[in-house]
Length: 229
Image: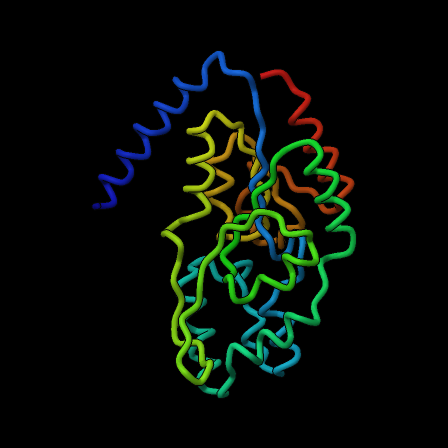
């Protein structure tokens, strides 16, 4: 499908969603990024252990996810680092302080979906520590020696498409993100919140309110869910 055709399809879909949702009972759902919101950044933690500064780069720094991942894979190959090496670091990581309590509170009010560009092979230990919220993410490709040779995205621009799909089910979508790769999801949602964004992202996307603590995030979510549509 060409870019023009995709835009036309998405425009028609948005018009259909708006018509379908008229006079519907308001039901909210939260779509949130994972790393930087509820867990530390996996690649930053691994870079510190491996002593490779360039692996600290994330989608907070580089907007093109494919460019970022190809560079990461090249660095891993250059340094003979495998999936096992990364998983050993992840198993020692803990969620952000207060993340589990916040998620448990939020899930008493509304359904929550974690929408991340991480990988099934990375996320497991951290999901266990967060009481297994629903997670939509991607998968890695490895060879027989455990080297990461590629990655499979669940779909292109998957975060945005999750938001659009949930809107088509008559949910009011609240999106939470912190990085460039969250922007299209935030733009597609009914309500968007930047959580502890870096200065560059916050300056470029001033249309999104920014909060910096779980207390502020809780207050903003309550304001959204208590308002009259």
